Image (cartoon, rainbow, N blue to C red; front, side):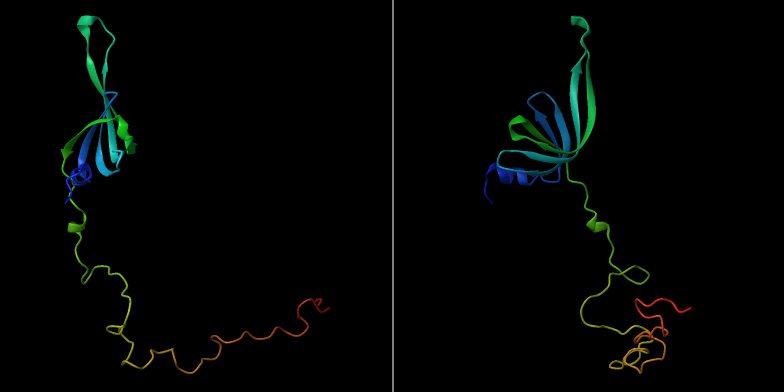
Length: 156
């Protein structure tokens, strides 16, 4: 495996990351992608910034404001540092159970397996298919009554 910056960052995809920007803000989110310019994509991102109150010199208070951002693209030239906040969330695919009796299953595609109940022996079409036509079902519709053709006036 190459030892470039890209391969080092690649192992932190899906981790919670704290990105510090050059203006003092920090953004915490799930790391999704990056490119050669260190542009970063974070999902479920929150912005944190510290504000200093404008009191006297002795009364300097700092408070942190949080703002939810969602999906964020951060330009690489603004990034000062990256820190891992936490591991990736547990995968939802491990929690899924395979289908079985009493569970919904997807429709199979391909060759026929076991015939559905009531289908009869293999090679014989099910009832209603391949049999003689039944009067009144399907076929061509009956002709219109006389004198009611297209474009003709109704009879008096």
